[in-house]
Length: 417
Image (cartoon, rainbow, N blue to C red; front, side, top):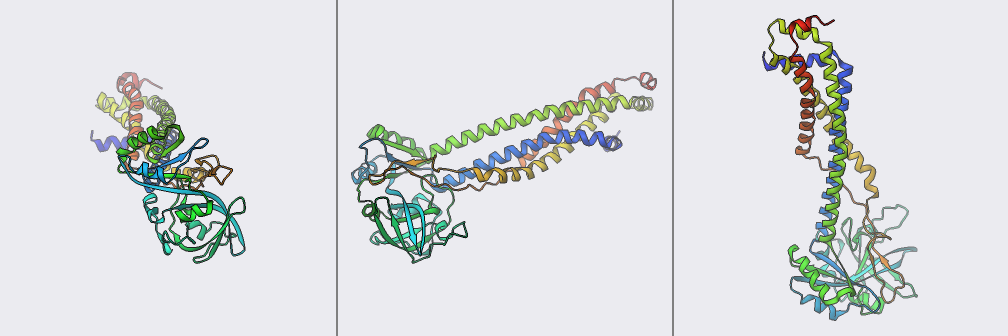
C-alpha cells in the first residue's frame, strides 16, 4: 500500500468523524498554543530588556554615597578614575524640582553633569533640535523628549529657546534657557532622559550650593572588567557607597525571565498530557467502531504492519494538525498577552531605584518610570518545536490503539457486531 494511500485513508477517517476529530484536534492545539504564547512573550520581554540595557551600556555602574556623613567629591572622582579597568568617571547632581514656564507649573528631575559625556551614558541619544550647551553656558539646558512632546495633550510642551525656572525646596530658584531637545530614548535605569532636564555640572553645583555629588557614574573599559571595578570600589569605600551595575541587574532579570519561561512551559506541558489522553481515547474509540472494516481489510490481504500504519498515521495527523493550528494561535495570542500586560511593566519609580538625599534635599530622590515596549519573539525553531511535540504526542498516543488494531484476526474482527 502506498504512503499516499495511507494518508488518504487517514484523512478520510478523520472527515467521517468530524466532530470527534475537531474536538480532539482542539485538545491537542491548546498545548502548543500555550507554549508558543508564553515562551514567545517571556523571550520578547527578555530581549526587550536586554536591548534597552545595551542602550544604557552594560559597562556602566552608579556609585552613590550611603550612610551618615558619606559623600562623593571631586577628590573621589580622581580616586575612581585611577582604578584599573575604569574608562570614564562622570559625577552628577540629581534633584527633583518644580519647573515653571509660560504660565505652566510642573515637576521634573534635574540632572547636572558633563553634557559632552551624555552619549557615553545613553548610546543612541542625540540632540534633535537646537544644540548642546557647553560647560561654560551655565544658564543653558537640554530637555528630554517627553518634556518637549508631553504624552498628555493638556500639558503644554516646553519650547526650544524658552526660559524655564527651576525651583527647589527652600526657595532656591534659577532660570535656564532651553538650548536643545534630546531624541526619544525610552526606559532608563538610573536616569530616564525623556523626562529629565539636563544642565552643566557647574550649574548643578551653583543650584544646590554643594560640592558633594549625588552620585558618580563609572564606566568600565569592558564588560569583563565590571566585577573587578566593583570589587576595587568596594575595597576602597566599603559600606560608604552603594554600587548598582547595569550588567548585574541585567543578569538578574535574564535569570528571572529564564526561570519564569521554564515554569510557564512546564505548566503548559500539562495540556500535552491531556492531549495525549484525548488522542489515545479517540483512537481506541475509532478502532472499536471499525473492527469489521479491519476484518474486511485483513481478509483482502492487508498485513498487520499496514493496519498499524493506517491507524498510527491517523493519530499522527491529528497531532500534526493540532500542533500547526495551536502554534499559529499561540503566535497571535502572544501579542495580545503582551498588549495586556506590557503597560504594567515599569522600571524605577517611587518604590524603585532611589537616590540618597543631597545635602540640600530632605527627602530621597527617586528615578522616573517609563513603559517598556515589548514584541514577542516567535522563532521558526519555537514553532517547529511545538508542532513536532504535538506530532510526537499523536504518534505515541496512537501507538497502542494502532497495535491493538493490527493484532486483530480476520475471523475475530468479522464476527464483531
